[in-house]
Amino acid sequence: MNPFEEGQVMLINKPIGWTSADVVKKIRNRVHTKVGHAGTLDPLATGLLILCTGKFTKKISEYMSQEKEYTGTITLGATTASFDLETTPENLKDFSQVDQTALLEVSKKFTGEIIQVPPIYSAIKKNGERSYDLARQGRAVTLEGRRVFIKDFEMHILELPIISFRVTCSTGTYIRSLANDVGQSLGCGAYLSSLCRTRIGNYHLENAIDPELTDIKIRTDN
Image (cartoon, rainbow, N blue to C red; front, side, top):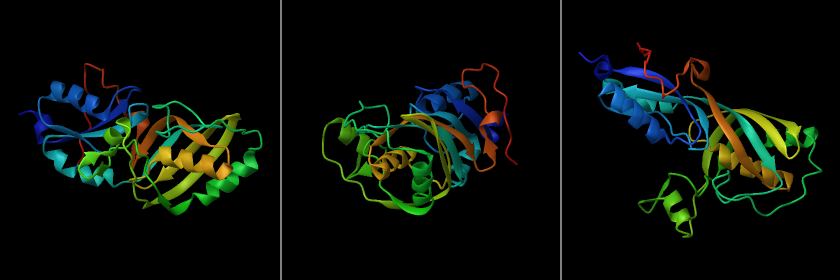
């Protein structure tokens, strides 16, 4: 019997440029049974992607609901329509006034329960259509804010305009929106310039495998 049909959870280190669907397709072709992922990562993001195979696809919502941790960089002094590097930076502004004290104050502002507006370049459906499809067609999109919880949020200056961050948050949090909100609060604009998901619940990136590996080692979730 195919052990993947019985159900496995697989920890994948998603490469930059891959969609989450690309990873699912790659693994499905290897294990020859149904595969689903527990939480999308944008193509420009890297890091931990949990896959469930066979009977374990019924458990996907359990993994999706768990706390997430991310690290990455935010670039100050400009904004983008997508809140990341999918679109071109614009609206250039001076960022020289930003210091570590200002970052600390802003991180406190966005710690705890907040109302966050998702980016229009997202998979959220609006009147039956994906928001990112509408945005890419140049059509107006308005998304409603929703409650998310930021448990921890740290930012540090690397070399202006680049700052590094680590955030622990609830499911449904858009780190791109968080980067954009940071820029608004600092008064200089900002966008997400790199992102890596390092943890989902008790599952950690260091235990993940490259999806290109030909010899897939599985982890059984009992």
